[in-house]
Length: 101
Image 1 (cartoon, rainbow, N blue to C red):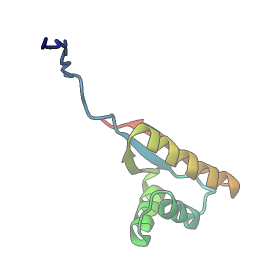
Image 2: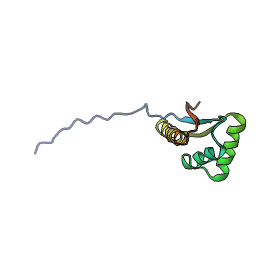
Image 3: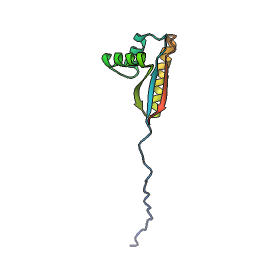
Image 4: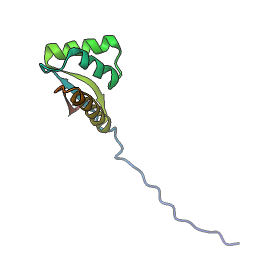
C-alpha cells in the first residue's frame, strides 16, 4: 500500500506582543456637579463609593485624573458612555484617551 505524503509547513510567529494600553482621563470643569462625577465613576468605571469620591476630589483639586487604563476599544467605549450620560444631563464633562507611556 503506497504511503501518502503531505507537506505541512509550520509557521512561527515572533511578532506577538501585548496590546497597547490607554489611559482614560477625566477633566475638571466648573459646571458638572460632584455628585454626577461620582455617579459616572460608579456606573461606568465600577468604582466603590469611597474610591469614586476620592477620585472626584482629586479631579476637583488637581484639574484631571486618570480613572482607568484599558485597551483602546474599551477606553473609547467608556469615554463614549460617560460622555453620553453627561450630555443627557446637560453637563460639559470631558474625558480623554491617551496612550499609556
